[in-house]
Length: 264
Ligand SMILES: C=C(O[C@@H]1C=C(C(=O)O)C=C[C@H]1O)C(=O)O
Image (cartoon, rainbow, N blue to C red; front, side, top):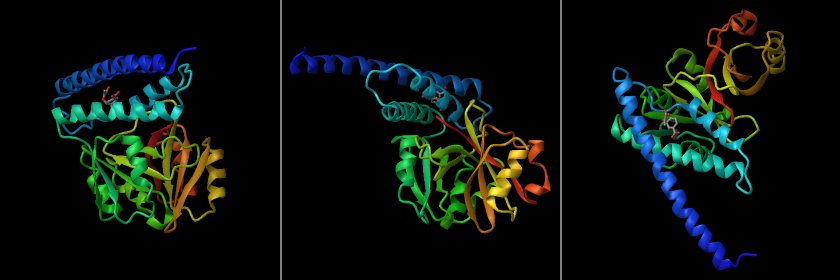
């Protein structure tokens, strides 16, 4: 068996190797930033974030064999590495990412969830309310993170009239329970093979009745929030914004998709 001193020598050697790899990854992030600036020069208004790619790369890592590292540490470390690459890319082009949280927040955990998902690199600040958070998210450098606590009202229904701002992440990320908060950004979500689509309805029917009606149209739905006479559901999988199966008055006269989040 190795002595304590031997084991510590092995850790020191691994740390040096890890640093070399972390640095190599950051250098690639920088090169990708430069390639983005070159290949998408006309699209300066495009977010650097690719939530779909991030989810797929993390999923791939989680599927790899490990001796002792937990899923949690894999996700936290890679979220920080991605956050650092986005910081490097942002510094080179349109400025770093900024997180907006609502000062009217009912849930104190939102900042923790936002940091777990987007890392320590982005700056953050509080805006007055959800309306200001949605407005801020129109800027491609901004991400807004808002609670789904019903005491915060049906702010999410406003996204029906704000097609550029979409839910792009469900938080906390590593929970199997239903999402308690979401992140908004000026990004059109892409399918990743395992997603939750967010759908709003003003139907006065009971939540279970709506889930049943959605089921008849081929959707597996989960109720997420009811506030101010409006309801928010999660539809399993990636659903297109103009899916014909949802275009029926029986599912509410005002309804629609407001984003999609990959699950990891
Ligand atoms: C590196 C890229 O930019 C961002 C950073 C990523 C990373 O560090 O792995 C992945 C996706 C993007 O959010 C990319 O677009 O590939």
